[in-house]
Image 1: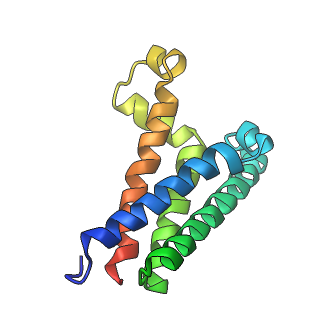
Image 2: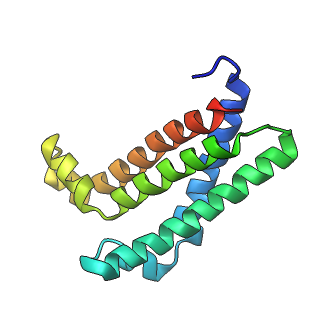
Length: 142
């Protein structure tokens, strides 16, 4: 990471992305997107892509607000790269099969996954972990 990146910028970007994640995943996402984003075939991919598009737009809005209020200076290219990483990894997780395969490979209990909210917890942990990587990318060029 570039030496010009400071912890305050990283923290502000991460908080903006995390807040946007919560709003986009739980308020902005439509019921149709939530119900069909993991469906097989094009129907599922299109529902998931629509969700990821609104999710990313929410992240852009949060970053614009953070810049406007705090005066942060973000590099457009690195910001686009961070948002792209967030979007792609969000799509991967929300299709469910890749997450399920990772959980199986890590021998996560099927009972916990289904009844204990485990799949949702793994989904959210995946998203937040990648939001941190996205925040690091975004702040590299700042």
